Length: 127
Image (cartoon, rainbow, N blue to C red; front, side, top):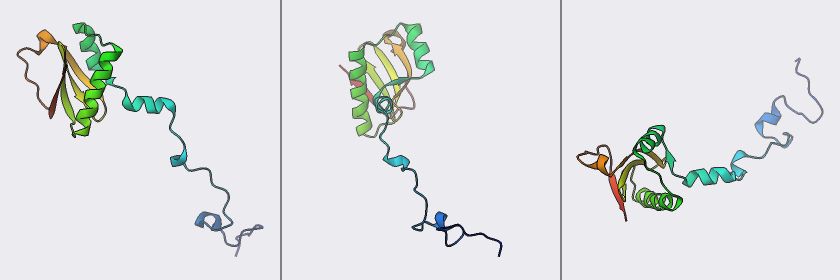
């Protein structure tokens, strides 16, 4: 037998089997606290590049209080199990993928007329 035993090791590989002689393991990843930015990112409304482009082209600008109202409506839609929602707020509309909280596209008042919205499972009208 050519396996050498070192002091404190009874069997080769014993440290890997969870014996009392195993070295101190690093702290588990699941026990670490989430970073502050990660907590913020969970609840922020995101905009796809397509949505950003459409909003820029159509002159749609949202203020923080408007984003808060839209985010609150998305929270309600998520609680009801919505996946893809049409959100109508004042004179513009947007399609939001609810689980990722991402605005997929947006249009202003005139762009909404004579439009058919497909592949949505819910609609939210914010007053």
